Image 1 (tube, rainbow, N blue to C red):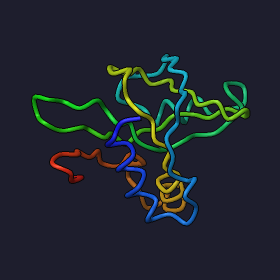
Image 2: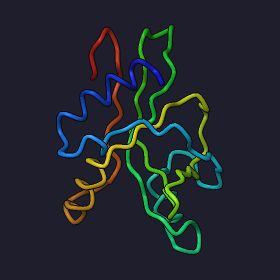
Image 3: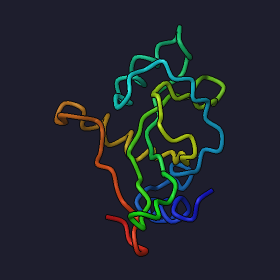
Length: 133
């Protein structure tokens, strides 16, 4: 797990009642089959019982450190969890070395405010010089 991943989890756990709502997911099956840059739509289409029998999952993809920008990109992301708690990502990814961080706070916010939202995809972040932006 990346240092930035640990920092993100520590920061986000301050804002949720259940600390397990924000956690590192160590194993995600990256099966592809969806459309690039369409993670919410891919996860939504794949949540059907005939596909995985599970649900959508919200969170973050923590990218590897980029020495050119001296920063780490953190991308808000959606994927699926099957009935056996296996995490499955149908969105093609350009970086297989990303850490997945489950963030149920995003899930709860989106589905509580569904009618008022134009999108269910949050803004990405950058971690640079010890700060998130």
